[in-house]
Image (cartoon, rainbow, N blue to C red; front, side, top):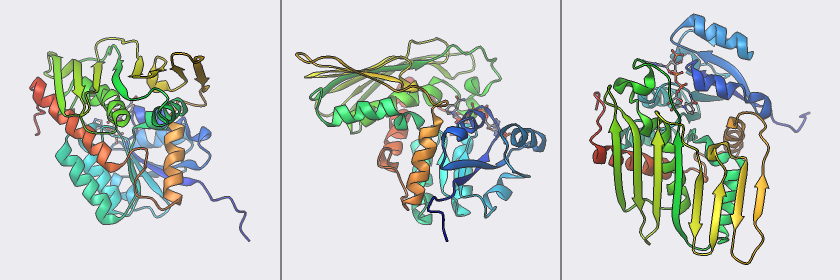
Length: 332
Ligand SMILES: NC(=O)c1ccc[n+]([C@@H]2O[C@H](COP(=O)([O-])OP(=O)(O)OC[C@H]3O[C@@H](n4cnc5c(N)ncnc54)[C@H](OP(=O)(O)O)[C@@H]3O)[C@@H](O)[C@H]2O)c1
């Protein structure tokens, strides 16, 4: 006799760093998911992580983790240049995979990774967690329902003042450091989602720092019907973090910091302003986990909220911005 309620998805995590910690703090708020196994390059760090977050299993290598038949899904939580090989490792071992953002370091890698998921017939999702937050989903629902008419202008920014030294991954060209891939990917993903297409024109200005990575970037995207996105990102400045969508019939504002997804406002001439608030549950990654569990149980390979083609379009846009600002990573 079954109880009727499916058991939670048992996660195996590759990499015991900062984002693995943040996501693991969200399992308690994601009832269809549970932290099961961890692997890190350092056995001690993996063991300490398992103790802290209550994971029952520590594997001695990434390979051993993806071969564990009790791992239902793998979360790739390592630095950007590691994503392709590690996500392919997981998919080829038959594991549905959630891969940190940016999906890869460039579009060529993203195509290779998507091809692997397609060959394996497995779920692959870029961990663009902001898309699954309730305020974000409310914004998309209003936009899709035509509440602000045709979208004409979108502005968004994401920036923080890093106090890390030059050796940190954020400033290391060998780890594809810089503002664009770390934080710029979020407003770009937002803009492509809202306009629902790839930009036709891409312009950018950047300040490159001492290590050669982009520390501040301003990006302009032009869409087919004249729509414009104006985006900023920085790893040197605390930007306020607002996002505004302007249509010919009104505006939608995601309150700062927009990626926290807690407050969204709809303003239309002749109508009362509508404010929707969504109090935080955990740190926000719980919605992404629940979306992944739902997709996995439904036998899906990709999310309609973030299809593979859109993750690829984001990577192509990032490539084009890098071409504009003259930024190549040493390993490319
Ligand atoms: N921090 C955030 O708030 C955040 C938020 C969203 C997304 N992300 C994304 O998550 C990914 C990881 O970010 P993070 O802040 O968690 O980074 P991190 O703590 O610096 O590193 C994550 C893991 O990457 C592996 N790693 C680090 N340096 C490496 C190197 N030189 N060669 C090979 N592997 C290396 C390590 O795995 P081992 O433990 O196995 O050694 C490390 O624990 C990035 O792609 C980032 O864009 C981060």
